[in-house]
Image (cartoon, rainbow, N blue to C red; front, side, top):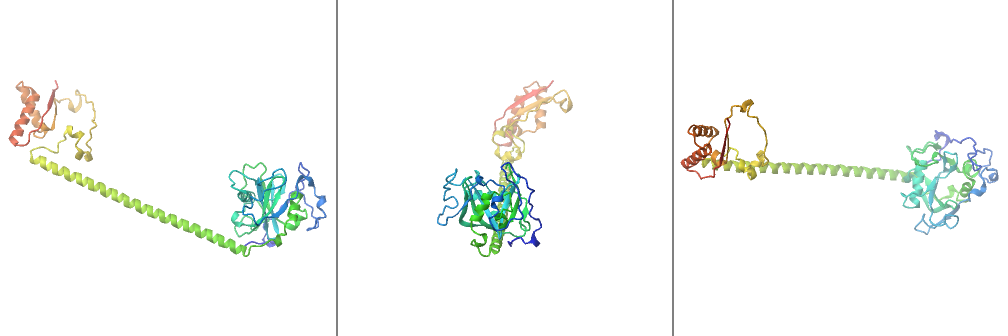
Length: 398
């Protein structure tokens, strides 16, 4: 709930820097004996009055392009405002920001590339220099002050506060969102009583801006939006409800995606299992058929490596394994023969039978390869199976 910051709720009192005059002849200055609410002491202010012309209050209620329009008509920056700020009221106080050099001003600054319009610039500057979020700001639409010397347009607004806001229990506070690239950053923000500001008691504020504030409407007479605290609570509740809805939708979407991925994985695993079963069944049928024909189907057939797709799932590859074995050492030292033959030989002859045929051929001084091929052909004819091409190459080691 917003309030006027009574004494009992102010935990951090307003800090006024000691009197130090800047290079322009003005700076932080406190004149406690001024008669609040009058203008008789304005001439005693240390500011040179020629430096800044008092902003003029304009109410533009018919223009739908406000606050871009109407353009600034006088001064060195005629046209669309090149900068913006917000004169923010909270009950009987107005927000002032204090830069590192001690000068006071209203929150304001020039437009940046990220600002789409004057309104974005005003909200951004208010956040950077005071840490006041835009959802706490209620603009008086159509009401603004133009500072023609700098091409800056101030929008008038009310600010509400609640527990948890940085400035809720403080008349002065340190902003947390100031631009780190600012050469003269804001170091402190204040809720200053309007009467003191109008009387010149806040000496760091240029008198031209104080006159502009005086020429504007009385904050107490500005049209109030009814039930501002309730409206803020409703906004907060709506924002929390929207966030909870988004979180629920996100959780539901993630759950649905997980379920869909789990189902897809199960389907892929089932498809892979069915393919493996199909391949195994086809292989078993082919093996049974070849066994019935007298072949030895479980023996690897090297020439099939280029097309035996039913064996691919068991690791059969057309890429050869190259290995160099020294014949003068190890377990292969006593190897006497090497036989390379097609499946027509190995379907009807074991390795032991092939070795016996080789030994007999050598003993009778016959050609070993021819003896192997002839023995295989004789076995095929005896078994009554289908004839198959047979190729054999033999190597004898001394």
